[in-house]
Length: 351
Ligand code: NAP
Ligand code: ZN
Ligand code: ZN
Image (cartoon, rainbow, N blue to C red; front, side, top):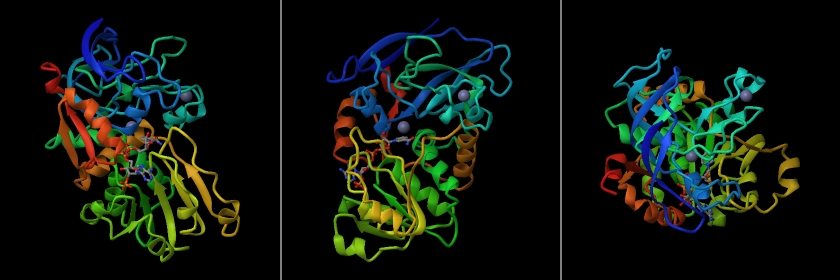
């Protein structure tokens, strides 16, 4: 076994605190990574506080991991010591079902194993994530990173990047399209950058008027304050696609009504309680759709990393110390993140 240090939640209400644990001994197909940076996703907060009622404690969150390879098993062929590598939201899946066969491990019929709060097949222990100094992962689930000059800002691509890239690709976003992004947080700001790089005209919907200039700088061509009815009405029936990243329940009809005939709004935000039920009429009169999308598979995550490297896309980050994580969560709840917290794991030792 390999000794590891991290930060864990021990129950839903106590702040995260230092935690010692062990990683599995290196298997022949395993890669051991020294974690340099880990992004802070809103899903970390949902999980640490058991907002989805499925958290196993102790819980070490973190699934936007980048670091340096420090050891490889005897059968590993894709990585060597000193490579820079990434780990995203999943660290294993059944490898046999139709979804795994299509490279869509996130939809594994037998349940993928999350980087944290996942349970090994048949096992009762939960996986522990990236708020830690080291991790051991099968090389099949490790990502290659080519843009290493701003590594901390690459970390958020491993969840916020792929979770927005995957639906933008699935719904074939591209030049000539008008695409809406709802919410300018970690996911939303990546969606603005990526949809813009794919050639779409991007309109950003926000509840925070002070984020307007940032949204334009990040690649939006227009910003709409979603609480302003007149501004919303001026966009009725005009969107080819809307990606909704909001982490809290809200009125979906306000956005459904902005879709063209046959267009889709895809939800990636995962609030702890349901949205108010959308109006059926908003859907049936224009054959509109509301859909959902979950992170992305390993092959598509690699494709996204390569796309972002090619287009020089990284996250806009605010670096924090490990012992600042609890304040970071409080700021996240106030939508006060510009636009992703990333933990400098070198600060773990002093924490
Ligand atoms: P985040 O950084 O906190 O951003 C969420 C944004 O939503 C906020 O910045 C805010 O943007 C907006 N917002 C928050 N409360 C709102 C409210 N009451 N009404 C309207 N807008 C509100 O969170 P994130 O890390 O991007 O994650 C967003 C959600 O996606 C979370 O629920 C997370 O668990 C989920 N998620 C899902 C997947 C997936 O696979 N589907 C993957 C990762 C994360 P404005 O200030 O611009 O309004
Ligand atoms: Zn995430
Ligand atoms: Zn499977």
